[in-house]
Length: 562
Image (tube, rainbow, N blue to C red):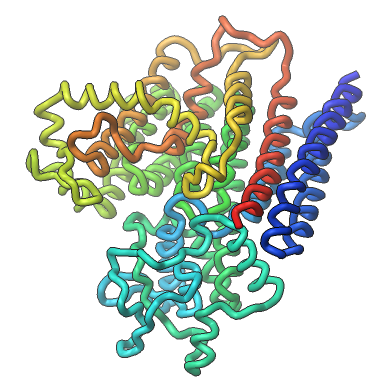
């Protein structure tokens, strides 16, 4: 009976995706008729066929029950996470994620250090292969100055990117055309043509005028490894970008898989968060959010495992927690409260208060040392700037920590206004209502946003026979930790991005809340809302199907952006 129901669900979803895919093929044909690029239809049909095949495969592993043992979620996740991530990697090209160009340059800098090659110019900007300028100047608009030791972009203000076309920052049909011409037809980029005509070698270095991210290099190890491999193999710019993103995706899937293995209960919740469109989009990009998401997922899993399943805490567990906080903390200081999840672990599992204090000190010291080494100057600047002297990142008069401490009512009013007026935006951007660089046209329909949200809530409900694990004070403590992270996110954006006179805190995005979402949902399990049957695997399968529809729809939207 279960097998029959599973095959029926697969059949319904296969039919629905087929109808919707054919419907969006009309959009592709419209784009082809305007642009004349007939290969767009071929790419779409290939994507469509892969999505249908993947839908059937996922249905088989999620829902069918043969004579053999049913696949566990731990075994299924690498297939689902990697498959969907690769499809997002294809549909949303390099540099399309939020701030991805800066993350790419930071990873490039680290790759140069790995290879023992020059990494920065005297002014602190990143050195790249001259042909890799293509990713930041797709039209070849840089006026090249070859008078120095490295090529530089003459005539362009380093603080002004006007006139520069960043590859993939706005995903249009032209973006797909450039990918097709370079990867399929072998067409030269403007930078490759410039190097050929000048007689310069492929390893000629150039200064990128765009700023990198100043944070811990550890957050860029996977991406940098991919770039380094591409440089060793002398791959072109696009292949380099795709390989760097692929390595980041493999890292995310690997660490999230380890977190699922370590999670003592509620694996379906973590699985569901990993299936959100925004999570998948970020996982297949250069963003350091990959390191933060994977690290916080693993931190949550380890703390839950030590608190509720393991009999004692081992030294390697403490070392792992310390490493996670040392790596992830400097990327975004706002996740420091996540260390509070360690307090869920009973003292007796450490062997007494003495070992508990030593373990707590080790984790806190690792975080503090990393923060001082990486962000010491920033912390000092925020802490010492005088009231009224603060400036936002745009140079406008902003809020200082001193001013906010002296006017707590102002701080509370800004927090209140932000929650009241922007909670809906946080929700939408957390799930992924706007992908790309928060592009409103690269959107996920609200109906699907509501479905993903409902799916997560249902995954957080108890199923028949499931015991309630997180109760009482521990549940309240998890809520406190999550609220502290959310408050820290708003406070950081209030100081860094919000001009005085604004009614709400500016710059806060819903993706900032993804790392704490699994812990929050796990704490929401209760005795009041209990499902009548266990449908978690069906919910996860339907979330995968929804992502497949998102992908084919996004491709159709891009084809219309001629």
